[in-house]
Image (cartoon, rainbow, N blue to C red; front, side):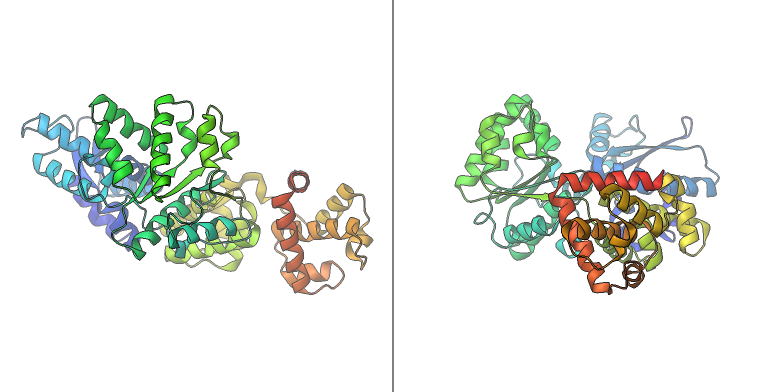
Length: 465
């Protein structure tokens, strides 16, 4: 246990205060095995442990090494598991070395921090919402604005507009963020609102536990009677589970008939979810369906700047644009790149300039770091659309010229360091407002037209090979 206490002392000066308070401080030492060189850390829930493993593991091991205790591996467990081990041991050290005092403290923290793990008969269950995921910290852009507006409307008038709200899109684009933001906004407006957030996996596990222990009445009371707003993440995972779909069907009907708000996220449209019952497919389409697509270049830059500000990191426009230019698929990858940059400057003690960013993210973005000349982009676009360079740069406004010209501007903005005025000069002296309008047009076409998306992907691959 001494190892974790000493590690905490070292981490406090290295980790941002917000991160230390919300991610590190809740961790309890569940045991230390010097023979196996294993440190057991008890956390509120499994997702908390996964976050620590992904974002702070390197910090932990560096502290171990500094303390002369390198070689320790970390095993995460939950407060409830520690409490169970301690009670079975009747006060003696359990298999993980946890003392009864720590087990009791962990169990108490679990009741405060992991409300969806409490007994189903409990009357007061504050929602398990991530404090980082609020509307104020959500960066909107053309590809997610509709979904955010719908989520705002639902939070303002739960149960009366857009019920259910079904948000779908690929992984890492902000669906979960909006789900938590709705929960926070509802609670801020009405602190007595009973908001329940669960993943579909947790919903399934709760149902299995209720069936196994013959407590279905408690399960139904928890989800139907003591719930005003139900938020379920990744609803697609109930597909193919007959008993779960049956229970969710009746739950949906009960809440909807009682004007209780339902918000669901998914990675695809209801009609595209395989092995989903038709009656559920129909109900998921009753309300409003809102999609989220990958953010455009300007939005990616804004997201990076906003998240860097929250984390207390000074991120120059040059570095933000470099990262946004090469990390394009989703917000989660942008966050991962920012975490790596932050760790690099802290560990190496160097300023976060473009050279440091290129060095730190080289393995992450790989071949995407290949320099692309603006003229190469123009030639590639001209070849793709069968137009001439003179036409791309000239004044003609016929559609078969303006669309390739706008796409060329978009790719120059995305793949090079050219500023908006420089791009305007490249295309015959156009002003920067014309360039901005062109970028917005291409983003709109990309979102609405699969053929345009295919051409953009084809051109990117060709330019980076």
